[in-house]
Amino acid sequence: MSEKIRILVADDEKAIRDGCHRVLTGQGYEVLAAENGRLALDMLAKEAIDILLLDLKMPVMGGEEVLEIVRTNYPDIPVIIITGHGTVDTAVECMKKGAYDFITKPFQLNQFLIIIGRAADKRTLEIKAKLFQEENLKNLYDLGLEKSRIKTIVNCMGSGVMVTNRNLEVVLHNPALMRLLEISGEVKNPTPITEIIDHEPLTSTLKSILSGEFPQDGSTAQEIPAGKNVLRSISAPVLGPDGAVVGTVTVLENITAFKQLDQMKSDFVNMVAHELRSPLVSIRQLNSVLLEGLAGPMDHKQQDFVGRGTKKIDALLELINDLLDVAKIEAGRFVQRKVPTDIGKILEECIGLLEPRAKNQGIVLSYSCQDLKPIHADPKNMEEIFNNLINNAINYSPDGGQVTVAAKGLGEYVEIKVTDTGVGIPPEELSKIFDKFYRVKHRKTRQVMGTGLGLAIVKGAVEAHHGTIDVESVVDKGTTFRVLLPAMT
Ligand SMILES: Nc1ncnc2c1ncn2[C@@H]1O[C@H](COP(=O)(O)OP(=O)(O)O)[C@@H](O)[C@H]1O
Ligand SMILES: [Mg+2]
View 1 (cartoon, rainbow, N blue to C red):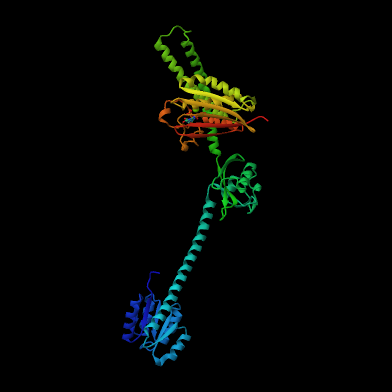
View 2 (view 1 turned 45 degrees about the vertical axis):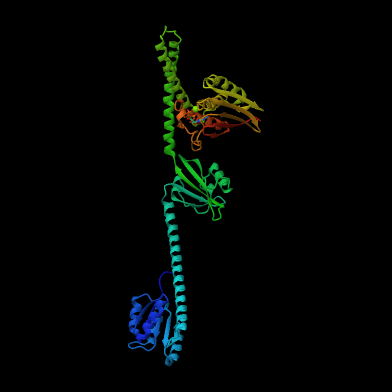
């Protein structure tokens, strides 16, 4: 403690007051003095005093009387009685009445300092204990306040909140949850979750969270139909002090309006794409007729212009086809007919088609296969997947190099790897390249035309076949896309 111990010396003898002042100040104490009992009490009322040195025989008000008042009004202050030889009996009496100690005049310095030291230690400890207690009380108060604050926030939130224990019983919920789920009656805690939301996928997500299958800091999002509405749930584990999963927390939001908007947007894009496609196809055909000279001969300049027009139309048609594919994937209509498919044959065909372009760019395109089994798939989708991947591998290898396609049977799966030695993809971009319209900016591949939809379609198509796709890449070294598709059993 940085504060000094303050000692009040109440004695009518100036020599004692001065002596105490000198000796005790020298020991690091702060010393105040009063020449009679009344003045001492006045001082106690005004100042924070830690120890009182009290003479028994003083004018105006004697020590005994002062002691009594101090014991009642300031029970924490240790009182040390100063006594002459003649008053030792009285001093003993005072001890009985609660004085801390007594000391006889003339003082023996050593003994005097020991007594004062002990009283000072007692005071210091008491002050520390008191501070500690106050701090504790404050913490308890803060905690109580924090609890009620959190309760207010949870109850006022627009999102529904539901907390379950390990038995999948709901132990906490808020009014918003009841509104979202259109439950009107009282719900007691705990209640089995199925009485609040009976949605199997959510229940199984919560079960996996409880079994620790999910990363403990991660959360899982799901869509849940609720009457006319669509809700989105985000679930995460609740961890106990030792880090073990003790329950789950789910936050629910009403996303019906977003879903409707999204649907309107998709319908609109779909409609526009369809409407644009037919006239573009006609224009392209007319251009071909012109280029072939079927409508009369064209000079070099005319051929050049019409040829450039056709290239632009091709790019537009690619965008339109990609948009229509994305719309189909989102509507779950991309896979049309699944048949036993020889993936090796499809890869060979893709490679055959793309070989001339690869050669043009100084790229060696090679293919190998091993232990291939047929897969149950829509051949059109497979063409789309590998056309996109091999096209990308060629497009994003501006300095030439090698593109290898390797297919092999891997247990119950068929694995197809498309590897290039191109520009690569920075690690922070890897998670985004499968997003719609996302394209990585690269100085060397700026001139590559594209829509940013290819990989979104690839991923959608792979997943529609219950497969997975992942990517590994090193900048300036190359990229490998790996597709796993279930083989036919
Ligand atoms: N093999 C690859 N090497 C380097 N970057 C690639 C490769 N494949 C895809 N990318 C990056 O991912 C982005 C998205 O690819 P994609 O969806 O096919 O769109 P697009 O090819 O039309 O740009 C590309 O723009 C490119 O930046
Ligand atoms: Mg592409």
